[in-house]
Image 1 (cartoon, rainbow, N blue to C red):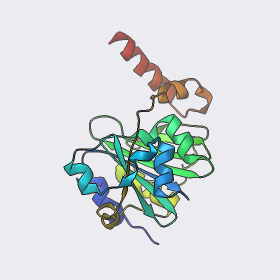
Image 2: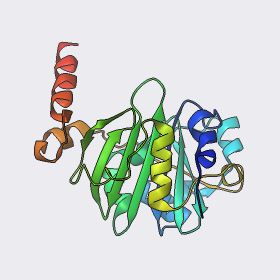
Image 3: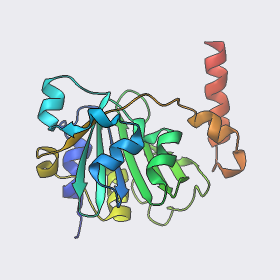
Amino acid sequence: MKITDADVRWLAHGWELGDVWCLTFVRGLDEAEALRRLGAAEESIRPLSYRELTDEGLFPRTVLAGRLEGWAVLIERNGSEATEPDAVRALSAGTDLVSVSRHDYATDLFVYAVDGDRLTSFDPRKPAWRYGSDPDRLLGKMRDVGVSGALMLAAQLSGVVLTREVLNGPLVGGVVGSHVDDTLEEGAGRPETISHTAVDLFAAIRRDEEQG
């Protein structure tokens, strides 16, 4: 399937998912298994539509999962649990993961992981700051900056893209816990895997936190 900019534009520049969201694509998993790996309690997994999620105010703890050909897609509104280090390892174990998160008031994030290993992560608005075990893995494919470019990159890697039909159709929901965010500690503890000025960025953030 040929994916064009029009296929991702409604996500990158529209408001269907709000101003804070995360889409995570995992190869070869069904919806329930993807939710389980994310930490959803078995008894919480049930059929749930996006409209029900929003109308009942179930986000951010409830995550939706859908099916896109051979990939599961996790849909988070006002959350990004799937980008946390423990979640990335669990979701990508034995398979591939591509995640794009948008946060209009903080940091956007792109994550690519294979078999539990986060190969590269970066803020699509600041792609020079990359970290992971192979931070430059996708340099040949990185052409655009911003969420639209990140969604196209995710589509190139997975071969799938979230459509309105899938978002508004039958989905599966599950309640997940909150993972400890040790992203900074993980990156700062392995400076040899960080590209460009990321080490300085982590140090500056830590200084600000200590002074604040």
